[in-house]
Image (cartoon, rainbow, N blue to C red; front, side, top):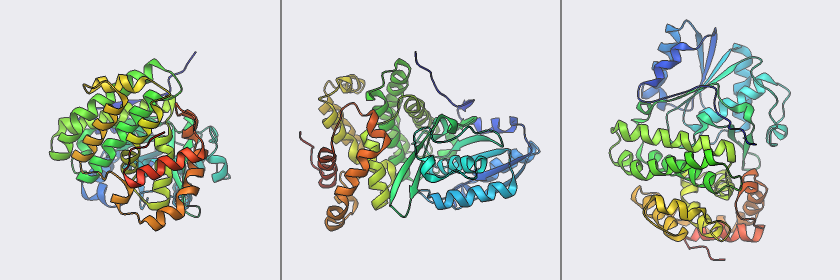
Length: 383
């Protein structure tokens, strides 16, 4: 028997932000990153809706692109002072992920980071507050997932917090909020969404529901990402990419991810490479590595008019180039000296990443390092 995990309530489609007016409560804290949701008017729209619903509200801002446990603890302290019964993660995945982790500490002040990073390490929530996720980027699907990625800045390592307690109570997937997304963010987050769908489909957990969601998301990305990239005001493409992101999140929160994410967590944690960019660089080579252990890539190849895993990897490389994402980590700008200094430790941390457990092919640290090096130099991995 299997169970399908999902957010409590999901509203999607252009204009669906208006559904926020239907929440019932007294106080809400809105967690945001930098200036983008202020400058594009999204924050003001949310605040106006909360005013109309007679919900007192405040804002915690300053979540960095890779949210740290330090920021999470600052946010949890702000929660404690304001005492909200609703938490709203608004903006990119970083703001929503950070808000999830803040929520956990707000409800359990003695919770340590070491406890949080264990699988199912988050105790029961919703004793103090419920959670709303409103994404303004189309990549992680965090509005529908039981996952938050938080960085330990002292170690330079990203850790995924994995617990179904972190599933939002309300998710709003409104493509209108993405119209002002910069082109590089559109590209990186779009291939992040694709990666989620691909890794969920080939996960070592078989699930017909997750497979259908993954395939639907992959088709939407290939049909819409270049349009959203080249024509940012095309709201149909924006909504389709937002839906693809959500479908990918829906899929992987039930069957989890693989070593593309194990690698990307390290690449981002050590070198600050945007998560979607790291995924885009790693995904084709991980397909090549995993292809000997599963025939499911052939299914995905047929979605784009191809037949083999290699052809599918090549189609992803073409899409990546068409939206101007670097083909290698060296091209991204990481020096060879810095790379060689860190790659072995990165491989060790990647092996220990929870996502590695769900990869369709088992591997060791030597193989992980070989994949990392192929991604650095832009070479096709060969085993």
